[in-house]
Amino acid sequence: MKLYVGLDISLESTSVCVVDQNGSVVRECKPATVPEAIGLALKEWKGSIERVGLEAQALSPWLSVELIRLGLPAIVVETVHMQRALSAQRNKTDRNDARGIAQMMRTGWFRAVHVKSPESQQLRFLLSGRRLLKRKFIDVENELRGALKAFGLVIGAVGRGDLEARTLELIDGAPRIVVALATTLLRVRRMLFAEYAELHKQILRFVRDDEICRRFMTVPGVGPVTALAFKAAVDDPARFKRSRTVGAHFGLTPRRFQSGTVDYSGRISRCGDPEVRTALYASASSLLVRCKKWSSLRAWGMTIAKRRGHKKAVVAVARKLAAVLHRMWRDGSEFRWSTAKDAQPNGMAATALTA
Image 1 (tube, helix red, strand yellow):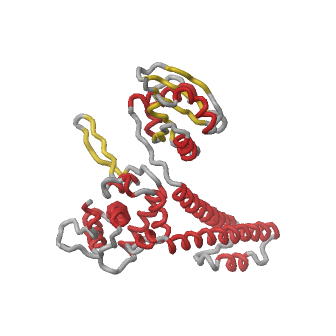
Image 2: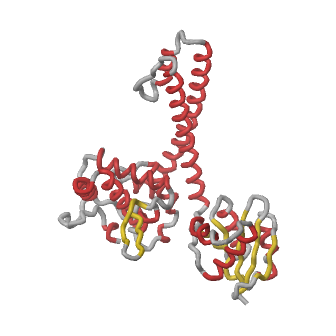
Image 3: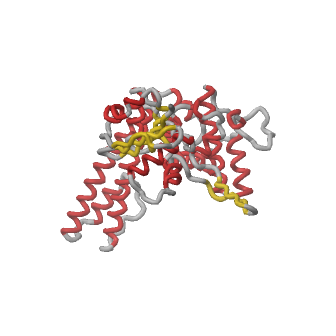
């Protein structure tokens, strides 16, 4: 008899539901959220279990790997798809969610998520830490600028390296509390910036020693952060059969709505990793605006910009960049500044764009 398991995970305990191939509940329990406890609860039916489903969340990578090590066929399910499927239930409880997940495993109506390797997870942690510190010290700068304006002290347009000297010059002779708060914010900003710079150096060191990232950076507009973010997000290039689907994976393709006589395409879907999408967009913008060296990819983007506008051109080039980077990674090829037939109407910059 084939069995299917649904796991609704929380920090302390996990609701487990086991159903048979007819959808009847075989067992329900609530062990602790540790792989050994879950494995012990399912030990009796270990040889009959076809799928074990759990929602994609913070604990999912660790739990799925450990459950597979224990011999359980764990599958991590895409969060939005699962939420839509479970929203039909009248009552939202952990027990009902576990039942719903088990039924999804039985019917096969789910969308599996790729569980990234430990190395990719570490790289994503490094990138997210750098991003967090950058946002925080920018928030401190903005708070400092805004607070001083109330006293008529305008910092103005100064570089990041000159902001502290400019602030100390302005608060000379200001009320004591203004001086105390401004100097405190400057110390916090200095500390945050130093730690941010250290994390950025770690990224540069990794990219320098990584052959794949160095190859990515031969593409105009692609810097170390974009190269590392793309590598960490894709993790395994073999999981994409076609390079052009990578752009859709990161939400760079238009949404489509079709119902009856209504059929239209909207703005980009914005699904997938937002940080990779932002990095690809920034690289595409740099390629079109800052890069002066000619390439087929840039010429293609400039043609779209004249016809459809700059923003749509940047999105289109970002989508092409995702395909190019994936094909370069998968084939071990180099970026080609021009194609064999530059007169082609699509003006693609690499054979990756036809994959």
